[in-house]
Length: 299
Image 1 (cartoon, one colour):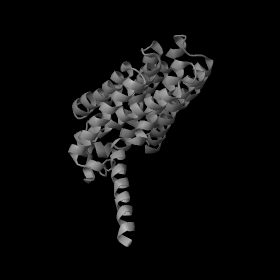
Image 2: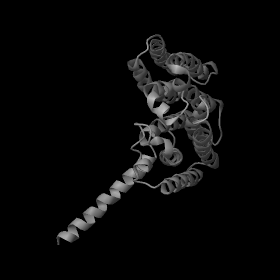
Image 3: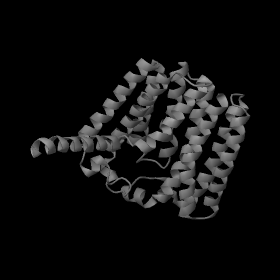
Image 4: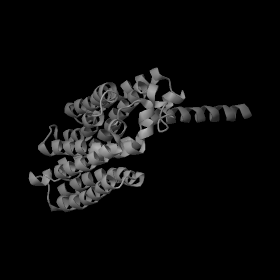
């Protein structure tokens, strides 16, 4: 009797552990912010609330595309992840998922994502999602990450694809507003990621990844964070300048930008891990709120 009870329970526990490890490959916490920008783009494009099933399946397809890219990233970076405290417990490094299975899982996620988006939304949304995956893996992970200090600047374009996917899912085309959303995420990425790089400088140095603070030092990195923040602020008001967003977005964006600029300036003038940490964490909230403001303003 005890075998009948414990056996299924053990199998269920093992299955749950396996699912958890594969879920880790997709980096859920990273994807959550990408999904916010996707959903906000959908609501903005619809000038209200899109069809519920369209939102659901676009979110599923978007998650699988980004998750597939992240899983492949685990496969490619398995040789350096073990040298960084932040990544040395990842499934492939820890041995809970084999490299080959991680790669197959990532490719399968990308394929299923394309199928879902093509069926539930349209082919343009599917193509954009797969393109985002290809840019992240092919341009950032395989080419730029280990070869140039500009890795996150150029490779950051991969994280800017979700708003395009969301917009295309609703409209079946890419409008000017969608490209401005792309630009906001693109210019937000360097100050966001370099603030994190300041906190993880030793990890990147140990892994041989040429992040800005490793190559040019902390002073240059803090200055670049401030300068890119100023550029980002200018980009965020372009929807208003183009007549695509109204006062709700404009006033809200100004307030959010003011806090970001103050934090970036304090980080530049005050060498402190505390300000680097504040800037990094605020940048996450900032991007989410900017996109939520767009959706509210459009509605």
